[in-house]
Length: 384
Image 1: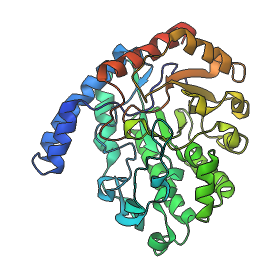
Image 2 (image 1 turned 90 degrees about the horizontal axis):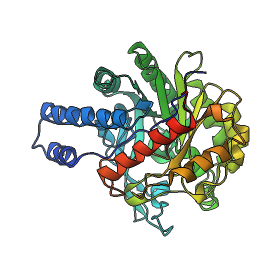
Image 3 (image 1 turned 180 degrees about the horizontal axis):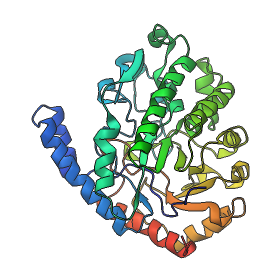
Image 4 (image 1 turned 120 degrees about the horizontal axis):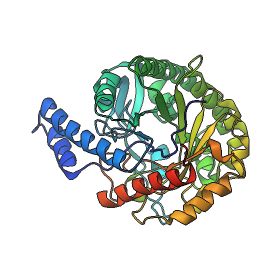
């Protein structure tokens, strides 16, 4: 097993106000690509320093070069992603209409019956070289802390295939996901060649679509066979890393992280753990959401592979209230009843800003939470 990053981070960070403003100006045509790049790189250097100061064992560039964590495609603006073949289509709201506000009331990303969505309409290909744009700069400006690279897993892209719009390019969703797998495999190989030794794929779909009865009912009403998809997705995601060793290979599962603290699903991992976790044989690390009661208990961890590390997402990114350190430590030792302490680690439950902006907390509160992760990890695992 690769060395475990005891104080981990999921990916996105709050953008500083000057970067948000710069991106708005760039979208409006009032800022050039090179000007935006200069401003973005200033923000990344500051983010790296903040994470190092917090005592983290790994860090990211905050995903500041992306419109959101979905680097391959924009949620509503398909052309913003690194992969071609997607088109912004006015389509049924589908899963984007199922999101909830923090209090559990309805609050979809699309509030009408239809809205703009990015769907695959042509064979996928590389729109631009995202790895060269992102990773070398991060690695160059990182000190002694390991830089990690985050990227969406193949399975997440099921959101982009709908028969009406996609079948002419890909007769089945599986055909599409296999092409996405091959593209992501290329990203992985490029990262390894560039010296990256921690690659983390985001697959929120597992916990978003499969565990909440309300969500399952909606998907099944659209003709989806979720039990079959769970197995197929796990096998495709696992195959990304076939034959690859010597690096940390991680998968992150959460229940949704939209602006304003919105989320998609309620329920523990028990609904999927027995089928999913044993199939992820090529992953040595799972980052799991455990910041609220709606995430369930730790019992599903008994299905995690014997050589797999579990990063407990016990620090919430959905509001700025700082957690009690003693309570977090107690929960770590509770989880150790199912996975030995030496295979556990700590992180926030998700990124701090999965898109360009977030209103969940201040930058000072974000920094305090990351420092808490570093402090607790140093206490619980003093020898690393």
